[in-house]
Image (cartoon, rainbow, N blue to C red):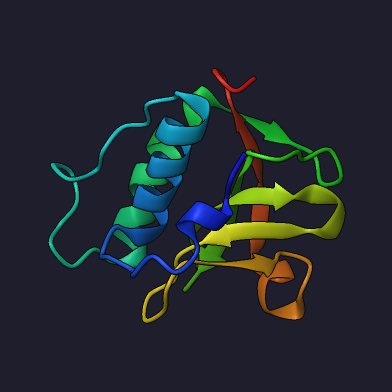
Length: 128
C-alpha cells in the first residue's frame, strides 16, 4: 500500500475519517460510509465518537501486537474514542492520520503522545 500519497493532505472537519475512507477506497477497494449527512458542520468529539461506535460492527477488534498494515487504529480525544488512523508499519508502530490544525502525517502510535490515547486496533470485515 502507498501511504506516502496521503501525507501532507490538509485537515478538513471530517479529516481523520475522510482520510481513512480515501485510503480504504483507493488502496483496498473497500467503501466505508460517509458521515456527511449525519454529522454537524462543526462536529464535536462526542458526535464523532457516536458515529464511530455505531460503525464498529463491520470491524473486528485486533489485540495489540497483532495489528497489520491497513488496520484501523482508534484513539481517545477529549475522553471520547473519536480519532482514527491507519496502521502503516506495524513493526515500527507507525500510523497515518489527520489531526485538526495540521496536515496528514505518519507518526508513531507507540510515542507517549499517542500510546496513552490508544483505544485499540480494528480490522474491517472486507480487509484482505
